[in-house]
Length: 268
DNA sequence: AATACCCGCAACCGCCGTGAC
DNA sequence: CGTCACGGCGGTTGCGGGTAT
Image (cartoon, rainbow, N blue to C red; front, side):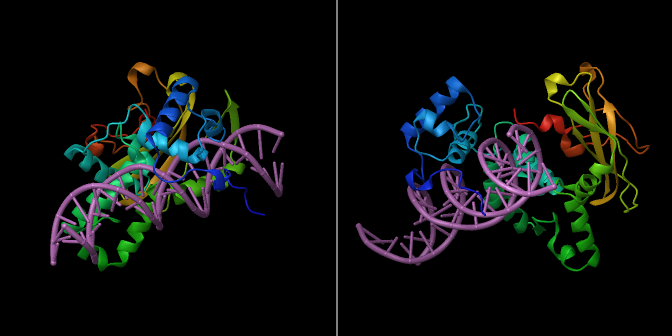
């Protein structure tokens, strides 16, 4: 049995939004807030699917959108983030205030891809096209780079182990502690730390989970997940844990930090 | 001026993860 | 534990404007 459709499509408007529809949607969200997208269209008097309303709001009507051309800095940041995250547009977008995942995805496909290709760089691997073609190692590296991204082998491994891990609940959050060392054993020169934590405003003393990926030349060599206690909010999180002895001032993506804190990737 | 073609972007589609029941 | 509703995400489509012929 298939899933029922999210809305009665035959009675819905499709295609470009009219000015009146935009106004209805904006005015409804201003007075009632975001959320309950399924019921929103009816409540707002719109003949649109809830998903369509959500997309229209997020990608076009939200007041904090920047719009306009991408700057050179944004260009570079997108390329760097894409080389690490792959097609995780929402994560990339979270690093660019005022930009949406859809906008970045379109920009990537229409501008950046072409620009990289014209420079002889494979946009999928971020390596020179010639280099990328002729080595078995490349396949292996591609796999590993994908793994560092967030649809990762590591993530899946972790998930499948979840049931065996000791867990405890605190403030409705599942907390766990584990340490994983992935088999690729190459010396690190990049630490990419992923932290999964409670909402920013509530986290001053709550534990959170941190995952760290070590990389060299695109090769992941180990990763770890540890349960951490957040420090005082005044010291933010960049220096909270120091597992690696080789943790030497890495200028990650020009962000002047050796650790990437994904809490700061939340959409503002 | 008319037509064909190209390109960018908004919107849609379908899948997935998660939480409620 | 299975089912369902829902939100979110990434891939794809197709319209409309711009450019070339």
